[in-house]
Length: 248
Ligand SMILES: [Zn+2]
Image (cartoon, rainbow, N blue to C red; front, side, top):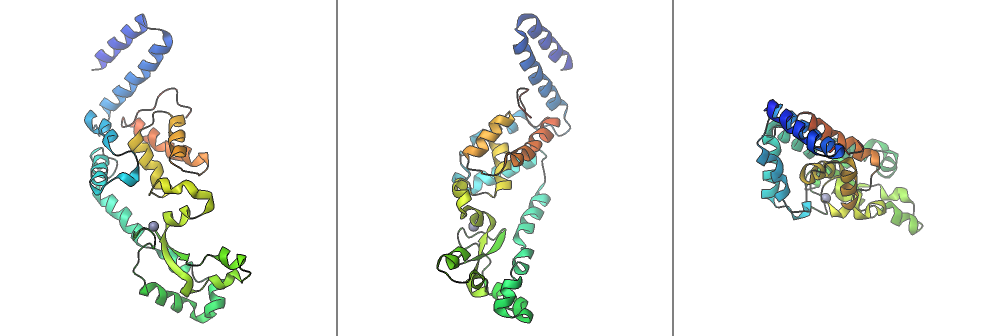
């Protein structure tokens, strides 16, 4: 195989313009890296990512099942790790403690706050009021603080258990005016970045950046650059292709 790659490279160099040679030389190196990698999936596995619906909100359960199975087959993680990640999102240790601050203490009495919050939490069904998920729940106001302010009322009055409900992290974020486009994806930002990387498979950072913006992700570019590290990690073991023209 190595001999074949060298021969092809030699023929390219003799007969093609230098830019063309440089471009394909890198592709051949990537191919070699891929072929030599320990967890070498079949090429069909790598390209089959393109057959899914374009937007994640059109994905059915089967799409998600196939997608996760493909990533497991590629060796990115295993089912035990998937299980652990999901279970950690079911547990919401911050929900109760986020409701014991001085504003809740003022409204419930300092010594009674935790017992009132606990009673409230135990009465809930543990699902997001907007989308119904049980994962990544946060306590959220039914009547927003802003509404209290606008009507000339004390915004601290918003912080009592009778005005609280569960909303998941993503639904919470997309309600904010600064995230008006957040509804383009059902995924929290961190998940959406990985979903875009692994399903759209941009080959340059610039393309990744553009895809993220088109999908409505509004965070700072540095978050895209952090996420792009995953492309490099996978490229380094032959599971991703980064074009030499990529900025990063
Ligand atoms: Zn939700």
